[in-house]
Image 1 (cartoon, rainbow, N blue to C red):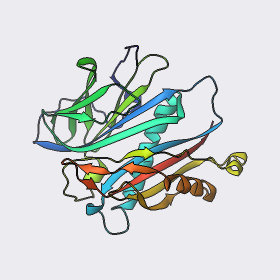
Image 2: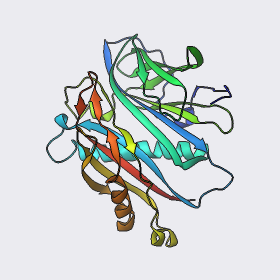
Image 3: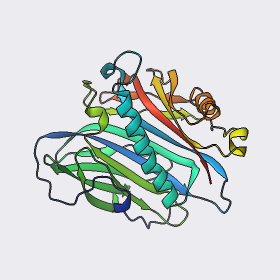
Image 4: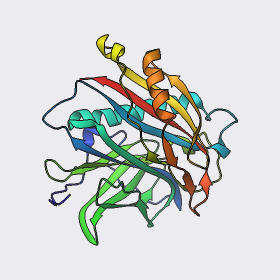
Length: 287
């Protein structure tokens, strides 16, 4: 990101629940999920098929019943909704399906306290978020992008409680597009009574590219495979299963890929490794 032309704005057409109202402080803290997405424009050659990968809702094992995520139906619906947001971003800005990076953080956001967001290696910009205030219906956040000590973009956004808004920008025509998804009262904070006040979501350390099955491509079979992944404290998937899929061939391709990945485990605010469940979406797309 050598050419500093980053503009940071609320993507109104891509925001869910982004009401523009004044948000007065209504309490000391608010559960908030921040997700940083980084994408890159397509090259001159446009692939005819690809797989968009979207890690979804992360739930500490301590807060879920044995053997399955809590409120599985709600988790599935939320994961699909988040996938549609990411898919719309990638389609709108014509981004490369094979180059999508995502990192997230769940916190108990305190009014007036700045939070450092996880910055993917693919972007040389630091991100901070601050909860400015909230009431029963709306929360107001300030999202700041910095290069070193220089503020390169600064935006304030109002988000409905239990809603979602996307703040994003790009730096030059060929440099990364960067989006920050803000979710006050994320679904994991509603059905899951876990004790951890904050944790950093798992970060993938070993990646294997999913293979779009040849026969499925020839028959123009496409769609979303949604997996449930149980990740242990070593970052190893201990259980991977299909929650939803349009075709067994796509299911097997997603399972084969996910079982080979390794992760830096989720960690609590004091650095303790945390076993979690999370959803992983493989969106098989024919273009």
